[in-house]
Image 1: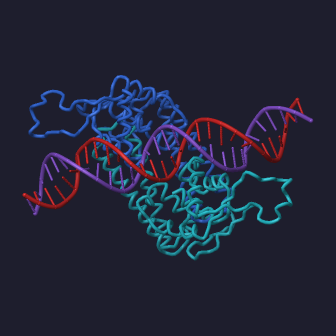
Image 2: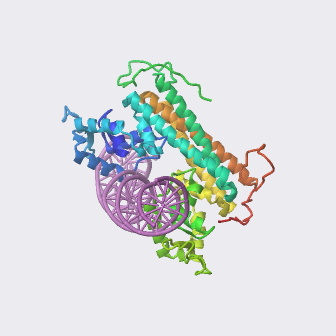
Image 3: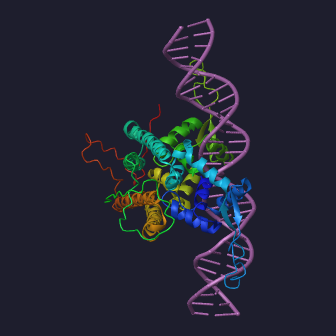
Length: 212
Length: 212
DNA sequence: GTGCGATGTATCGGTCCGATACATCGCGGT
DNA sequence: ACCGCGATGTATCGGACCGATACATCGCAC
Protein backbone atom coordinates (compact mmCIF):
# COMPACT_ATOMS: atom_id res chain seq x y z
CA UNK A 1 0.00 0.00 0.00
CA UNK A 2 2.78 2.39 0.91
CA UNK A 3 4.51 1.58 -2.34
CA UNK A 4 1.41 2.52 -4.30
CA UNK A 5 0.94 5.74 -2.38
CA UNK A 6 4.54 6.85 -2.82
CA UNK A 7 4.52 6.08 -6.53
CA UNK A 8 1.28 7.99 -6.90
CA UNK A 9 2.52 11.05 -5.06
CA UNK A 10 5.85 11.20 -6.83
CA UNK A 11 3.95 11.23 -10.09
CA UNK A 12 2.73 14.68 -9.17
CA UNK A 13 6.10 16.10 -8.18
CA UNK A 14 9.55 15.04 -7.00
CA UNK A 15 9.84 15.10 -3.22
CA UNK A 16 12.05 14.14 -0.31
CA UNK A 17 10.97 11.90 2.55
CA UNK A 18 9.75 14.49 4.98
CA UNK A 19 7.69 16.23 2.33
CA UNK A 20 6.32 12.91 1.14
CA UNK A 21 5.11 12.15 4.61
CA UNK A 22 3.32 15.46 4.87
CA UNK A 23 1.61 15.05 1.53
CA UNK A 24 0.71 11.50 2.39
CA UNK A 25 -0.85 12.69 5.63
CA UNK A 26 -2.81 15.37 3.83
CA UNK A 27 -4.04 13.04 1.11
CA UNK A 28 -4.79 10.03 3.30
CA UNK A 29 -5.64 11.82 6.53
CA UNK A 30 -9.18 10.55 6.30
CA UNK A 31 -8.23 6.90 6.46
CA UNK A 32 -5.04 6.53 8.44
CA UNK A 33 -3.08 8.48 10.99
CA UNK A 34 0.36 9.37 9.72
CA UNK A 35 2.80 7.14 7.97
CA UNK A 36 5.79 6.22 10.10
CA UNK A 37 9.36 6.95 9.08
CA UNK A 38 10.12 3.43 10.10
CA UNK A 39 8.08 2.36 7.09
CA UNK A 40 8.75 5.26 4.77
CA UNK A 41 12.53 5.24 4.52
CA UNK A 42 12.95 1.50 4.09
CA UNK A 43 10.24 1.56 1.43
CA UNK A 44 11.96 4.39 -0.42
CA UNK A 45 15.12 2.33 -0.40
CA UNK A 46 13.27 -0.67 -1.70
CA UNK A 47 11.63 1.32 -4.49
CA UNK A 48 14.94 2.82 -5.48
CA UNK A 49 16.61 -0.61 -5.53
CA UNK A 50 13.80 -1.87 -7.75
CA UNK A 51 14.28 1.05 -10.11
CA UNK A 52 10.82 2.53 -9.67
CA UNK A 53 12.18 5.77 -8.24
CA UNK A 54 15.53 7.55 -8.47
CA UNK A 55 17.32 10.33 -6.68
CA UNK A 56 16.84 13.69 -8.28
CA UNK A 57 19.52 16.27 -7.77
CA UNK A 58 17.94 19.21 -6.09
CA UNK A 59 18.05 22.64 -7.75
CA UNK A 60 18.50 21.10 -11.19
CA UNK A 61 19.94 24.24 -12.76
CA UNK A 62 21.80 27.18 -11.25
CA UNK A 63 23.37 25.04 -8.63
CA UNK A 64 25.83 27.63 -7.38
CA UNK A 65 23.49 30.56 -7.28
CA UNK A 66 21.82 30.21 -3.95
CA UNK A 67 23.88 27.84 -1.83
CA UNK A 68 24.73 30.58 0.64
CA UNK A 69 21.10 31.51 1.07
CA UNK A 70 19.66 28.04 1.59
CA UNK A 71 22.35 25.42 1.49
CA UNK A 72 20.22 22.32 1.42
CA UNK A 73 22.52 19.45 2.08
CA UNK A 74 20.90 16.56 3.75
CA UNK A 75 17.75 16.26 1.74
CA UNK A 76 17.36 13.45 -0.69
CA UNK A 77 14.83 14.22 -3.37
CA UNK A 78 13.25 11.33 -5.23
CA UNK A 79 11.51 11.31 -8.57
CA UNK A 80 9.56 8.56 -10.25
CA UNK A 81 11.08 6.71 -13.22
CA UNK A 82 9.41 5.47 -16.38
CA UNK A 83 9.43 1.96 -14.93
CA UNK A 84 7.90 3.38 -11.79
CA UNK A 85 5.03 4.84 -13.77
CA UNK A 86 4.40 1.47 -15.34
CA UNK A 87 4.51 -0.15 -11.95
CA UNK A 88 2.03 2.38 -10.61
CA UNK A 89 -0.35 1.77 -13.50
CA UNK A 90 -0.14 -1.95 -12.88
CA UNK A 91 -0.71 -1.66 -9.14
CA UNK A 92 -3.59 0.77 -9.48
CA UNK A 93 -5.40 -1.39 -12.02
CA UNK A 94 -5.16 -4.81 -10.41
CA UNK A 95 -7.46 -5.36 -7.48
CA UNK A 96 -6.74 -8.14 -4.99
CA UNK A 97 -8.52 -8.77 -1.70
CA UNK A 98 -6.34 -6.20 0.05
CA UNK A 99 -7.75 -3.58 -2.29
CA UNK A 100 -11.02 -3.67 -0.40
CA UNK A 101 -9.91 -3.39 3.22
CA UNK A 102 -10.04 0.00 4.87
CA UNK A 103 -6.53 1.13 4.11
CA UNK A 104 -6.23 -0.45 0.71
CA UNK A 105 -9.49 0.98 -0.52
CA UNK A 106 -8.60 4.41 0.83
CA UNK A 107 -5.30 4.51 -1.01
CA UNK A 108 -6.85 3.32 -4.25
CA UNK A 109 -9.66 5.82 -3.91
CA UNK A 110 -7.24 8.66 -3.24
CA UNK A 111 -5.73 8.03 -6.67
CA UNK A 112 -8.97 7.57 -8.54
CA UNK A 113 -8.12 10.66 -10.57
CA UNK A 114 -5.40 8.53 -12.17
CA UNK A 115 -7.58 5.44 -12.53
CA UNK A 116 -9.74 4.57 -15.49
CA UNK A 117 -13.47 4.43 -15.00
CA UNK A 118 -13.90 0.68 -15.40
CA UNK A 119 -11.39 0.06 -12.62
CA UNK A 120 -12.99 2.70 -10.42
CA UNK A 121 -16.32 1.00 -10.80
CA UNK A 122 -14.88 -2.43 -10.08
CA UNK A 123 -13.17 -1.20 -6.92
CA UNK A 124 -16.21 0.66 -5.66
CA UNK A 125 -18.38 -2.39 -6.15
CA UNK A 126 -15.84 -4.67 -4.52
CA UNK A 127 -15.65 -2.37 -1.54
CA UNK A 128 -19.42 -2.24 -1.31
CA UNK A 129 -19.60 -6.01 -1.31
CA UNK A 130 -17.04 -6.23 1.47
CA UNK A 131 -18.81 -3.66 3.62
CA UNK A 132 -22.12 -5.39 3.04
CA UNK A 133 -20.60 -8.60 4.31
CA UNK A 134 -19.29 -6.87 7.40
CA UNK A 135 -22.72 -5.34 7.88
CA UNK A 136 -24.40 -8.73 7.69
CA UNK A 137 -21.94 -10.11 10.21
CA UNK A 138 -22.78 -7.32 12.62
CA UNK A 139 -26.50 -7.81 12.11
CA UNK A 140 -26.08 -11.50 12.84
CA UNK A 141 -24.27 -10.79 16.07
CA UNK A 142 -26.80 -8.17 17.11
CA UNK A 143 -29.64 -10.50 16.28
CA UNK A 144 -28.56 -13.94 17.26
CA UNK A 145 -25.86 -13.46 19.85
CA UNK A 146 -27.15 -10.34 21.55
CA UNK A 147 -27.91 -11.91 24.90
CA UNK A 148 -24.41 -13.32 25.14
CA UNK A 149 -22.82 -9.89 24.98
CA UNK A 150 -22.76 -7.03 27.46
CA UNK A 151 -24.31 -3.64 26.83
CA UNK A 152 -21.04 -1.92 25.88
CA UNK A 153 -20.10 -4.53 23.33
CA UNK A 154 -23.56 -4.28 21.83
CA UNK A 155 -23.28 -0.53 21.63
CA UNK A 156 -19.98 -0.93 19.80
CA UNK A 157 -21.63 -3.25 17.30
CA UNK A 158 -24.49 -0.83 16.78
CA UNK A 159 -22.10 2.00 16.11
CA UNK A 160 -20.18 -0.20 13.69
CA UNK A 161 -23.35 -1.26 11.95
CA UNK A 162 -24.39 2.34 11.56
CA UNK A 163 -21.03 3.18 10.00
CA UNK A 164 -21.40 0.26 7.58
CA UNK A 165 -24.84 1.30 6.46
CA UNK A 166 -23.62 4.82 5.96
CA UNK A 167 -20.65 3.73 3.92
CA UNK A 168 -22.78 1.51 1.71
CA UNK A 169 -25.03 4.46 0.96
CA UNK A 170 -21.99 6.59 0.19
CA UNK A 171 -20.66 3.94 -2.15
CA UNK A 172 -24.02 3.61 -3.88
CA UNK A 173 -23.95 7.31 -4.65
CA UNK A 174 -20.43 7.14 -5.97
CA UNK A 175 -21.27 4.11 -8.11
CA UNK A 176 -24.31 5.84 -9.54
CA UNK A 177 -22.17 8.87 -10.35
CA UNK A 178 -19.57 6.70 -12.03
CA UNK A 179 -22.16 4.95 -14.15
CA UNK A 180 -23.62 8.22 -15.28
CA UNK A 181 -20.15 9.35 -16.26
CA UNK A 182 -20.00 12.23 -13.89
CA UNK A 183 -17.14 13.19 -11.60
CA UNK A 184 -17.65 13.05 -7.87
CA UNK A 185 -19.28 15.90 -6.00
CA UNK A 186 -16.99 18.86 -6.80
CA UNK A 187 -18.90 21.11 -4.49
CA UNK A 188 -17.01 24.33 -5.19
CA UNK A 189 -18.57 25.89 -8.29
CA UNK A 190 -16.32 28.94 -8.23
CA UNK A 191 -12.86 27.54 -7.63
CA UNK A 192 -11.67 28.08 -11.17
CA UNK A 193 -8.76 30.23 -12.22
CA UNK A 194 -5.59 29.72 -14.14
CA UNK A 195 -4.65 26.85 -11.88
CA UNK A 196 -2.26 24.50 -13.57
CA UNK A 197 -1.88 20.78 -13.18
CA UNK A 198 -5.47 19.97 -12.66
CA UNK A 199 -5.10 16.42 -13.78
CA UNK A 200 -8.82 16.41 -14.18
CA UNK A 201 -10.70 13.15 -13.75
CA UNK A 202 -12.11 11.85 -17.02
CA UNK A 203 -15.23 13.90 -17.54
CA UNK A 204 -14.89 16.93 -15.33
CA UNK A 205 -18.61 17.45 -15.02
CA UNK A 206 -20.06 19.43 -12.23
CA UNK A 207 -22.10 17.56 -9.69
CA UNK A 208 -22.76 19.29 -6.47
CA UNK A 209 -23.89 17.46 -3.46
CA UNK A 210 -25.64 18.91 -0.50
CA UNK A 211 -24.13 17.90 2.76
CA UNK A 212 -26.06 18.18 6.03
CA UNK B 1 -3.84 -5.18 21.95
CA UNK B 2 -4.21 -8.86 21.13
CA UNK B 3 -2.84 -9.69 24.55
CA UNK B 4 -5.49 -7.58 26.23
CA UNK B 5 -8.26 -9.08 24.13
CA UNK B 6 -7.21 -12.67 24.80
CA UNK B 7 -6.88 -12.08 28.52
CA UNK B 8 -10.30 -10.46 28.55
CA UNK B 9 -11.99 -13.27 26.69
CA UNK B 10 -10.39 -16.05 28.71
CA UNK B 11 -11.73 -14.36 31.79
CA UNK B 12 -15.20 -15.33 30.63
CA UNK B 13 -14.42 -18.95 29.85
CA UNK B 14 -11.50 -21.26 28.98
CA UNK B 15 -11.08 -21.68 25.24
CA UNK B 16 -8.84 -23.07 22.56
CA UNK B 17 -7.35 -21.06 19.72
CA UNK B 18 -9.99 -21.58 17.09
CA UNK B 19 -12.78 -20.75 19.48
CA UNK B 20 -10.89 -17.70 20.73
CA UNK B 21 -10.66 -16.42 17.20
CA UNK B 22 -14.38 -16.81 16.65
CA UNK B 23 -15.27 -15.06 19.88
CA UNK B 24 -12.76 -12.34 19.10
CA UNK B 25 -14.35 -11.85 15.70
CA UNK B 26 -17.81 -11.65 17.22
CA UNK B 27 -16.78 -9.21 19.92
CA UNK B 28 -14.53 -7.00 17.82
CA UNK B 29 -16.23 -7.41 14.46
CA UNK B 30 -17.17 -3.76 14.48
CA UNK B 31 -13.62 -2.51 14.56
CA UNK B 32 -11.39 -5.02 12.82
CA UNK B 33 -11.72 -7.86 10.39
CA UNK B 34 -10.62 -11.16 11.86
CA UNK B 35 -7.56 -11.83 13.89
CA UNK B 36 -4.94 -13.84 12.05
CA UNK B 37 -3.66 -17.16 13.33
CA UNK B 38 -0.21 -15.86 12.54
CA UNK B 39 -0.72 -13.44 15.42
CA UNK B 40 -2.93 -15.54 17.63
CA UNK B 41 -0.84 -18.64 18.18
CA UNK B 42 2.46 -16.87 18.83
CA UNK B 43 0.68 -14.56 21.26
CA UNK B 44 -0.85 -17.52 23.11
CA UNK B 45 2.63 -18.95 23.41
CA UNK B 46 3.98 -15.67 24.72
CA UNK B 47 1.19 -15.34 27.27
CA UNK B 48 1.71 -18.88 28.44
CA UNK B 49 5.46 -18.34 28.79
CA UNK B 50 4.77 -15.22 30.84
CA UNK B 51 2.43 -17.16 33.08
CA UNK B 52 -0.69 -15.13 32.30
CA UNK B 53 -2.48 -18.15 30.84
CA UNK B 54 -2.12 -21.91 31.24
CA UNK B 55 -3.28 -25.04 29.48
CA UNK B 56 -6.46 -26.50 30.89
CA UNK B 57 -7.05 -30.18 30.45
CA UNK B 58 -10.20 -30.62 28.47
CA UNK B 59 -13.07 -32.67 29.90
CA UNK B 60 -11.93 -32.06 33.48
CA UNK B 61 -13.87 -34.94 34.96
CA UNK B 62 -15.22 -38.18 33.52
CA UNK B 63 -12.42 -38.48 31.05
CA UNK B 64 -13.20 -41.96 29.87
CA UNK B 65 -16.90 -41.59 29.46
CA UNK B 66 -17.23 -40.10 26.03
CA UNK B 67 -13.91 -40.53 24.23
CA UNK B 68 -15.50 -42.77 21.64
CA UNK B 69 -18.20 -40.25 20.90
CA UNK B 70 -16.03 -37.19 20.50
CA UNK B 71 -12.39 -37.96 20.98
CA UNK B 72 -10.97 -34.50 21.09
CA UNK B 73 -7.23 -34.85 20.79
CA UNK B 74 -5.57 -31.93 19.12
CA UNK B 75 -7.26 -29.11 20.89
CA UNK B 76 -5.33 -27.06 23.39
CA UNK B 77 -7.60 -25.30 25.82
CA UNK B 78 -6.24 -22.28 27.68
CA UNK B 79 -7.48 -20.69 30.87
CA UNK B 80 -6.42 -17.47 32.50
CA UNK B 81 -4.29 -17.59 35.67
CA UNK B 82 -4.47 -15.38 38.74
CA UNK B 83 -1.42 -13.48 37.46
CA UNK B 84 -3.21 -13.12 34.14
CA UNK B 85 -6.17 -11.50 35.81
CA UNK B 86 -3.86 -9.03 37.50
CA UNK B 87 -2.19 -8.34 34.20
CA UNK B 88 -5.56 -7.76 32.55
CA UNK B 89 -6.62 -5.33 35.27
CA UNK B 90 -3.37 -3.43 34.85
CA UNK B 91 -3.61 -3.28 31.05
CA UNK B 92 -7.24 -2.26 31.05
CA UNK B 93 -6.70 0.56 33.53
CA UNK B 94 -3.60 2.21 32.11
CA UNK B 95 -4.18 4.32 29.03
CA UNK B 96 -1.30 5.17 26.72
CA UNK B 97 -1.51 6.89 23.33
CA UNK B 98 -2.27 3.57 21.65
CA UNK B 99 -5.40 3.36 23.77
CA UNK B 100 -6.99 6.02 21.62
CA UNK B 101 -6.30 4.81 18.11
CA UNK B 102 -9.06 2.94 16.29
CA UNK B 103 -8.10 -0.58 17.26
CA UNK B 104 -6.89 0.20 20.76
CA UNK B 105 -10.00 2.13 21.65
CA UNK B 106 -12.22 -0.57 20.23
CA UNK B 107 -10.62 -3.28 22.32
CA UNK B 108 -10.75 -1.21 25.48
CA UNK B 109 -14.36 -0.31 24.81
CA UNK B 110 -15.30 -3.93 24.21
CA UNK B 111 -14.23 -4.69 27.76
CA UNK B 112 -15.81 -1.67 29.40
CA UNK B 113 -18.06 -4.02 31.35
CA UNK B 114 -14.91 -5.01 33.24
CA UNK B 115 -13.60 -1.45 33.56
CA UNK B 116 -14.32 0.96 36.39
CA UNK B 117 -16.24 4.09 35.62
CA UNK B 118 -13.40 6.56 36.15
CA UNK B 119 -11.28 4.72 33.60
CA UNK B 120 -14.17 4.47 31.17
CA UNK B 121 -14.64 8.20 31.36
CA UNK B 122 -10.95 8.88 30.92
CA UNK B 123 -10.76 6.66 27.85
CA UNK B 124 -13.91 8.09 26.25
CA UNK B 125 -12.60 11.62 26.71
CA UNK B 126 -9.18 10.72 25.39
CA UNK B 127 -10.74 9.16 22.34
CA UNK B 128 -12.94 12.18 21.80
CA UNK B 129 -9.92 14.45 21.94
CA UNK B 130 -8.09 12.36 19.40
CA UNK B 131 -11.03 12.29 17.00
CA UNK B 132 -11.50 16.01 17.39
CA UNK B 133 -7.90 16.51 16.38
CA UNK B 134 -8.35 14.34 13.33
CA UNK B 135 -11.50 16.28 12.52
CA UNK B 136 -9.64 19.58 12.71
CA UNK B 137 -6.94 18.24 10.46
CA UNK B 138 -9.52 17.26 7.87
CA UNK B 139 -11.23 20.63 8.11
CA UNK B 140 -7.91 22.32 7.58
CA UNK B 141 -7.22 20.31 4.47
CA UNK B 142 -10.72 20.86 3.11
CA UNK B 143 -10.46 24.55 3.82
CA UNK B 144 -6.91 25.56 3.06
CA UNK B 145 -5.59 22.91 0.68
CA UNK B 146 -8.74 22.14 -1.24
CA UNK B 147 -7.58 23.55 -4.56
CA UNK B 148 -4.45 21.39 -4.48
CA UNK B 149 -6.45 18.17 -4.36
CA UNK B 150 -8.57 16.41 -6.94
CA UNK B 151 -12.29 15.80 -6.60
CA UNK B 152 -11.95 12.18 -5.45
CA UNK B 153 -9.48 12.98 -2.72
CA UNK B 154 -11.72 15.76 -1.51
CA UNK B 155 -14.70 13.44 -1.44
CA UNK B 156 -12.67 11.03 0.66
CA UNK B 157 -11.86 13.79 3.13
CA UNK B 158 -15.49 14.82 3.32
CA UNK B 159 -16.56 11.28 4.07
CA UNK B 160 -13.87 11.02 6.72
CA UNK B 161 -14.87 14.34 8.23
CA UNK B 162 -18.46 13.20 8.38
CA UNK B 163 -17.42 10.00 10.17
CA UNK B 164 -15.39 12.05 12.67
CA UNK B 165 -18.27 14.36 13.48
CA UNK B 166 -20.54 11.40 13.92
CA UNK B 167 -18.14 9.64 16.25
CA UNK B 168 -17.65 12.75 18.35
CA UNK B 169 -21.40 12.97 18.80
CA UNK B 170 -21.56 9.31 19.71
CA UNK B 171 -18.80 9.79 22.27
CA UNK B 172 -20.54 12.82 23.73
CA UNK B 173 -23.61 10.72 24.34
CA UNK B 174 -21.62 7.96 25.96
CA UNK B 175 -19.77 10.43 28.15
CA UNK B 176 -23.01 12.04 29.25
CA UNK B 177 -24.39 8.61 30.09
CA UNK B 178 -21.30 7.73 32.07
CA UNK B 179 -21.46 10.91 34.06
CA UNK B 180 -25.08 10.29 34.91
CA UNK B 181 -24.19 6.78 36.00
CA UNK B 182 -26.37 5.04 33.48
CA UNK B 183 -25.57 2.14 31.22
CA UNK B 184 -24.86 2.88 27.57
CA UNK B 185 -27.55 4.14 25.23
CA UNK B 186 -29.97 1.33 24.44
CA UNK B 187 -31.47 3.62 21.85
CA UNK B 188 -34.45 1.62 20.61
CA UNK B 189 -37.51 3.01 22.37
CA UNK B 190 -39.98 0.93 20.43
CA UNK B 191 -38.24 -2.36 20.10
CA UNK B 192 -40.57 -5.23 20.76
CA UNK B 193 -41.21 -6.00 24.35
CA UNK B 194 -39.54 -4.86 27.51
CA UNK B 195 -36.22 -6.56 27.02
CA UNK B 196 -34.17 -4.50 29.45
CA UNK B 197 -31.34 -6.93 29.87
CA UNK B 198 -29.07 -4.19 30.86
CA UNK B 199 -26.19 -6.11 32.25
CA UNK B 200 -25.65 -2.96 34.21
CA UNK B 201 -21.92 -2.38 34.13
CA UNK B 202 -21.21 0.30 36.77
CA UNK B 203 -21.88 -2.06 39.65
CA UNK B 204 -19.55 -4.87 38.67
CA UNK B 205 -22.42 -7.18 38.06
CA UNK B 206 -21.97 -10.71 36.98
CA UNK B 207 -21.36 -11.03 33.31
CA UNK B 208 -23.11 -14.30 33.07
CA UNK B 209 -22.46 -16.26 30.02
CA UNK B 210 -23.66 -19.57 28.84
CA UNK B 211 -21.49 -21.80 26.74
CA UNK B 212 -22.92 -24.85 25.00
C1' DG C 1 24.72 34.01 21.57
C1' DT C 2 21.62 30.91 22.83
C1' DG C 3 17.89 28.08 23.25
C1' DC C 4 14.06 25.93 20.69
C1' DG C 5 10.77 24.30 17.44
C1' DA C 6 10.54 22.87 12.68
C1' DT C 7 12.91 20.33 9.28
C1' DG C 8 15.29 16.31 7.87
C1' DT C 9 17.37 11.30 7.55
C1' DA C 10 17.90 6.93 9.54
C1' DT C 11 17.66 2.35 12.40
C1' DC C 12 15.81 -1.21 15.56
C1' DG C 13 12.68 -4.23 17.91
C1' DG C 14 8.24 -5.73 17.97
C1' DT C 15 3.34 -6.57 16.48
C1' DC C 16 0.42 -8.27 13.28
C1' DC C 17 -1.03 -10.08 8.69
C1' DG C 18 -1.49 -13.32 4.64
C1' DA C 19 -0.20 -17.46 2.69
C1' DT C 20 0.61 -21.93 3.47
C1' DA C 21 0.82 -26.60 5.33
C1' DC C 22 -1.16 -30.40 7.48
C1' DA C 23 -4.42 -33.43 10.16
C1' DT C 24 -9.12 -34.87 11.76
C1' DC C 25 -14.25 -34.98 12.00
C1' DG C 26 -18.94 -35.50 10.50
C1' DC C 27 -21.77 -35.52 6.70
C1' DG C 28 -24.02 -36.59 2.34
C1' DG C 29 -23.74 -38.89 -2.05
C1' DT C 30 -23.15 -42.97 -4.84
C1' DA D 1 -18.61 -49.31 1.86
C1' DC D 2 -16.15 -45.75 0.12
C1' DC D 3 -15.04 -41.05 -1.02
C1' DG D 4 -14.90 -36.32 -1.12
C1' DC D 5 -15.60 -31.97 1.16
C1' DG D 6 -16.38 -28.32 4.23
C1' DA D 7 -15.74 -27.20 9.04
C1' DT D 8 -12.60 -27.64 12.73
C1' DG D 9 -8.10 -27.32 14.53
C1' DT D 10 -2.84 -26.19 15.26
C1' DA D 11 1.20 -24.23 13.50
C1' DT D 12 5.09 -21.53 10.90
C1' DC D 13 7.31 -18.07 7.87
C1' DG D 14 8.29 -13.85 5.43
C1' DG D 15 7.03 -9.35 5.07
C1' DA D 16 4.62 -4.83 6.08
C1' DC D 17 4.18 -1.38 9.19
C1' DC D 18 4.62 1.08 13.70
C1' DG D 19 6.74 3.50 17.79
C1' DA D 20 10.71 4.87 19.97
C1' DT D 21 14.90 6.70 19.41
C1' DA D 22 19.02 9.06 17.76
C1' DC D 23 21.20 12.71 15.56
C1' DA D 24 22.06 16.95 12.76
C1' DT D 25 20.79 21.57 10.78
C1' DC D 26 17.98 25.86 10.05
C1' DG D 27 15.69 30.06 11.19
C1' DC D 28 13.99 32.84 14.63
C1' DA D 29 13.03 35.07 19.02
C1' DC D 30 14.79 36.57 23.38
